[in-house]
Amino acid sequence: MTRQAFDDLHLKIRAARTELELGTLTQAVQSSRSLEGHEKMNLWDAVIHRKEELEPVPPSAETQDVAPPSPSRMASIELAAAVEGLPTPAAAKAMWARYRGVLDALVLPEDLVEISGRKYRKKSYWRRVAAAFGIRLEALSSSSELLEREDRVGWVARAVVRASLPSGRHADGIASCSTWERKEDRKEHDVYATAYTRAANRAIADLVAAGEVSAEEVE
Image 1: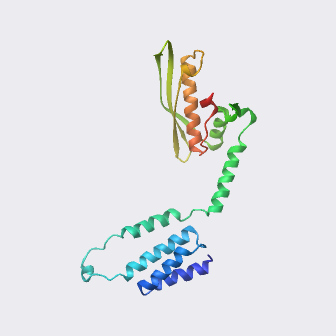
Image 2: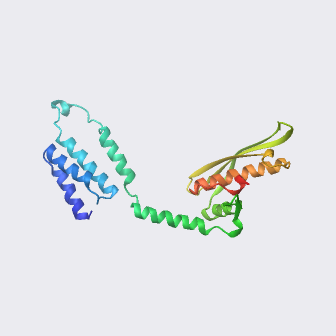
Image 3: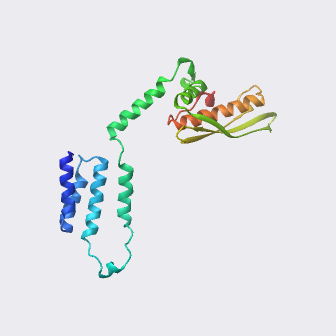
C-alpha cells in the first residue's frame, strides 16, 4: 500500500462517527493484502482507539481515576511495538540467506568428515565460527566418575559450556561422553575432552542458529 493510501485510510478511521462506519473500515483493513505488517498493526491501533472514543462514557467517569488501557488496546500496543522496525518478509529472507552464506564461507575441506554417508562439521569449524563472531567459551560445570557397567569399568564425563557474544547474548551446551561409546578403553582425560568439545560445539551452533550436530557427537 502506498503511503498516501495508508494515510487516507488512517484518517478515515480517526474520523469515523458511527460503529457501522468503523466496522466497514475494519473490514477494509482485514481484507487488504497490500498492507505491511507494521502498517496493519498501526491501523488496528487506530481502530481500537476510535472504538473506545465512540463508546458512551459513564456519567461518573469524570470523578473516577483514569482507567488503564483495555486488554485489547494493550495487546495492540504490544504487538505494534514488536512488529515496528522488523524487515519485510522478502528482506528477512534475503538477510537470512546472506547470514547463512557467511557461515558456509567459513567451512574448509578439512573441517568436514563423512559418517554413514553424511558430512558433519568438526571442532575446527565451530572454533573458527567462534573466532569470526567474537564468541567467548566458558565451562560452567564439569564432572567425571568411574562407573561399573556389566563386566567393564569405565569413565563417564559431563560438561556444560556457555558461548557468549560481545553483546551479552549467550547459549549453553550440555553434553556427555563415556568409555562405552567405543570398543577400546578410553582414558579419563579423553572422555572429558570429548564431552567438553561436544558441549562447546552445541553452544556455538545454538548461538549462531546453525542447528547442526557436530562430527564429535556422531563419531
